[in-house]
Amino acid sequence: MASTKAGTKKSTKTTTKKAATKKATATAKKAAPPAKKAARGKSKMQGPGGTLERFRAICMGFPEATEVEAWGHPTFRVRDKIFAAIGGENGVWSFGVKTTFEMQAGLVATDPRFTIAKYVGKHGWVDVRIDEANDGPLDWNEVRALVAGSYKMIAPKALAARVDD
Image (tube, rainbow, N blue to C red; front, side):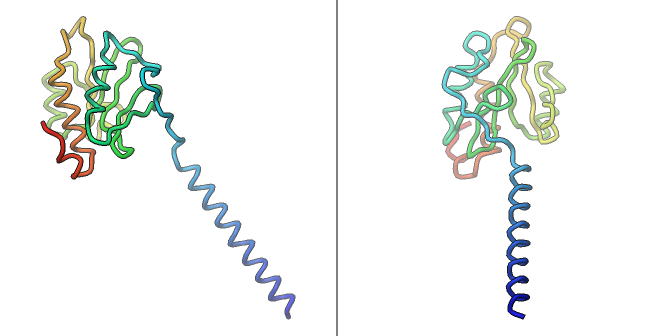
């Protein structure tokens, strides 16, 4: 009978260990791969006429803001949550921010530079095309206001309260 108990204990321990390993493996598969930290000024994306540098300066001016390169372009985060991103595709540059659904609808309906963002548009995100040749010079006060609004929606309340409009 002692061997049966030992066999049962061993079997139970092995089963528990296998279940724990299986659960850990499943959790690891679900987790996204770690994002790479962007080295200052070494991003794959450079942008037209210092646009990236000015956008970065705005975003990094917010409390606890960090820059992480993901999907091949800079994203700006507060406590690992993205509040803004910028990048170019096929020579067309844009930045993305979160807005309210009402603001998203109004911007998209009234200004051709604004489009509903792919994948995250259903959460209120918009992309803003940056094409000075066709749209005129970028209004950096408007950019800051849009980024600030996005930051305030994403950041914890205590950090959001520290941002002026």
